[in-house]
Length: 99
Image (cartoon, rainbow, N blue to C red; front, side, top):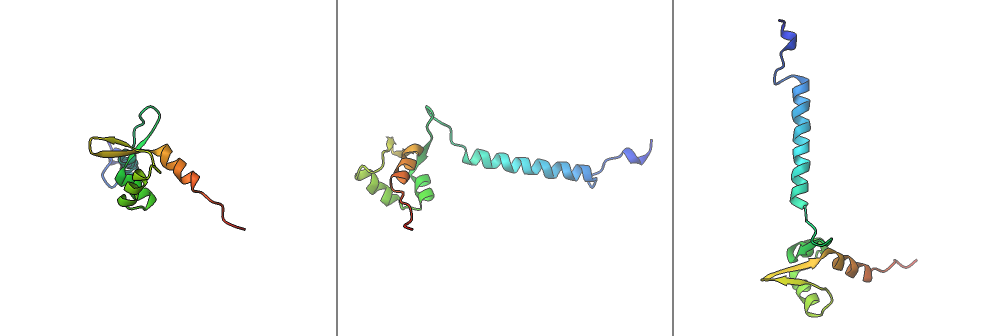
């Protein structure tokens, strides 16, 4: 048997395989970090997530809750918002730029 069948760590095929595998693992890691399961077809966001996404302080979100501007659920001490309610609130406040 010759050495032409020997595959080493520096073989292009091995390097390509591990680089591809690394890319897939990064993609899966990103998916699992950002995965939000649906409950009855609805995604829920925490107070912190909404605050970060909308660039609003958590105090402003508290004011929105107090003023009934934004529906929410309270489970124990955790505040949750339906993603659809956030989108609706943004849509209601949307204004076209003047021409």
